[in-house]
Image (cartoon, rainbow, N blue to C red):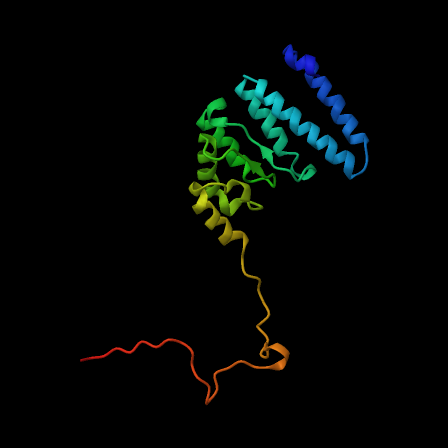
Length: 189
């Protein structure tokens, strides 16, 4: 596969990836799953780095969005604004934030800024929070919007117990007990 990637033989590389995928699916157990997932992530990063076809980059990333149920790891997205332009990058993020796949981006890059803007617009359509997007001061507004949507207080939360003193000792301000709070006296002289 390395030789096919380095020589730019895309059809042979695709065959190699299909064979590797078949091998991964034939293995059982969590160790094999993790191992192959890690290999595929590394291969995808390497392939993306060598691609100079914007449409192929988008197709590869979109195919990985569909694999959301297969992997808990985030999809590392390259600087799409530079690679494919802002319009295509925005269209990709509009699809991505409606899936359950987590997105990982480099903070501060033009792609991160665009993705944060799109995520903020689509926060109510997100099936799960994209906390990984909150990685700079520029994404505070996104944090607040996701916090509001996904961290709803639980209904029917238990009320605090009436007797919460240590070993049954109740702390309260009853008669004859001094108030230790500072008081401000305003003189009207």
